[in-house]
Length: 335
Image (cartoon, rainbow, N blue to C red; front, top):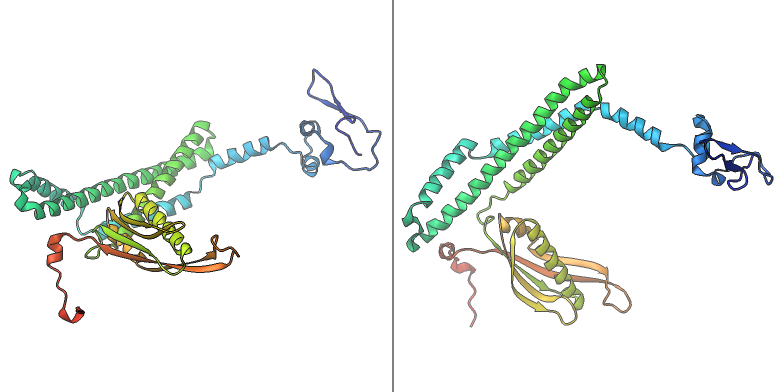
């Protein structure tokens, strides 16, 4: 039958039941899901098939049951694989490190003892000052990283051991307190293992930046190429991208020279990036960068190709520049 929500039902106040009567305007022997008020689903009894056919089931009970089932269904093999992956990356980074934790502490102690000498800060010893300060910063960062790795590995492995002990007992005794504890331990194990994997992969990537100038600051020069206004806008995009990326890496960015475009953007930009392995991160950006798009500066909205040049060079100290020798065969002298 076809029931109308306005004329087909009325609610009996003081009770939770509904009274249904056949509508005078019914013309087909079927239920219309669009003419039912949602609370009426509670009056259709416990016939799940009928409620499902009308699209009126109560999602609360099903969600509660699913939540209850998921509270006890913990995928231990997945957790074990996650913890094993984190432990493998941790061991690989420790083996790849030239110094172990005790050697790093010893090296830091020697450097700090040297820097505490009053004669260390004399002007004649400025070159040694810079080297020692860089070494102290590098070993201090490595020390903090190793301590964090050990802490995260201990947390995820301890949580996994507790889970392996609690889950078989929890299957026999359905205790809500145990379920809550299992959920907390699972979350702690997953978060600690995921964080350890993230930090280990980041350190593995940084260890590849071992070039002779990778730890130096970088000078980046952006120059607009062919394309006119479109090229100047492309330089502005690259300038914003490199600036935001450097800031995301906790690097200091200083714009030393900038030339505005005739309409928008910049004709050229010169910037300096100072941070951990700054030149190592940005040296791969050197070259010509091409942009192909429907130009907003073209009246006919045609596709336009434009270019911008990116030059990246390390910023060296005066003492390091003196040691550079340029062969005469590579010199070109014009008069």
